[in-house]
Image 1 (cartoon, each protein chain N blue to C red):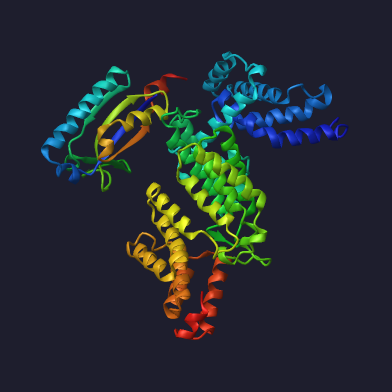
Image 2 (image 1 turned 45 degrees about the horizontal axis):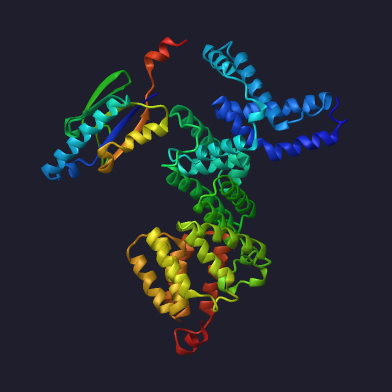
Length: 431
Length: 122
């Protein structure tokens, strides 16, 4: 009918869907108390907009219109289903008895609170980490199950099932739709930040698959990081966003034109994104000025030190090692110790770094961690200990599940096979 | 909403504790239960005999089978339970976190289905 008559209105509704649907959903979940009911209500509200706006003209406050229409449609839906299930009728009556949301109260602050409630509910620690990621990408970012499955090399049914189970647990265990009180905020925020960083890492340096970078996932994580830093500007939320931006500034330089991996020392630093670096550095300053320096802020400080250096050799490695010392105190994990060993190798030479890596591996914690063996192989290569380097590269190759990484290691193995043996000449020619 | 907090701990570790530590843990647990009762959060709290006293009952194909021991061999054993009344999972988690044995072992929080209420509702 009038749909063709008003293509610009149709376009406006499409654009509203992109910009507002997640906010409307977050509020509908609060009003209706159920994820699935709110999802249906959201779709119903947009269908109603497509039908009615061309006829009646768009409302003055589209967002408030969508929320109240969605709520009404949900109550209507429950009523119709209640012919088969009396409990749904009671639920509909209960929802109807509650005062309808006042459009004046649908201001930006109220909507922002609902978005935070949604984030904290999706990242509730009572859900498994996989479910937290899937729920956040689905409900907060609005990605489809297919998009999430593609990003995490899973199948749509697996992701869909994960989401269904998470929603069932939210319902059955009564996970509340709330922003945690101040006393629990640091711990709960930490879980949220972990989810955002996990999404970013899977985009910036995927653990497996054919691509060295999955840009859409890294972008989504940065969008999430921005949302959090805006809604809840806690020091670590700012620190995480700074870290994401500073790491992401190197994205274009991390792969060659033909999609091959380029390591930090070999990157063309002219291709680093100065806009990202400036934004990250400004956020980092805000995070540090709070006086509470957490692990994301420390990692961002390390990334900023790299960003400032004109070359790998001219990097302030002494400062980076110092920052890793602080980080190891805040987060005493073997992965941090490994990264610290890499910085020590740059500052004091590969032999010092190798001693640290060997000590970490001897503790057995990183035996199945690909980067530990790849790092060890690189240090041995730089020391000219070719046979041991080859063995370490082969061990790393066994653990590699990402194609560009696999090709990178195979190239290194090829170079080591073609070159001279473990003699002084080859040692002198290496870095 | 009612939640059952199942307290799991490694019995060998508990048995190895010096007596004064066991006494202190019991005193602390009793005090915590009293506090929880006063705040209206406690329904029932009991400690269990050790798993050596456990019997597992199953019915398969209409036949009752009774076996010695707990339902599964794990490193931690069910040592007690606290049935609590809480607004939502967050409050139940807060209460579970205050159970002294949570430090020694772990507490599983399970929502309780009120079968009587379910049956009488429709």
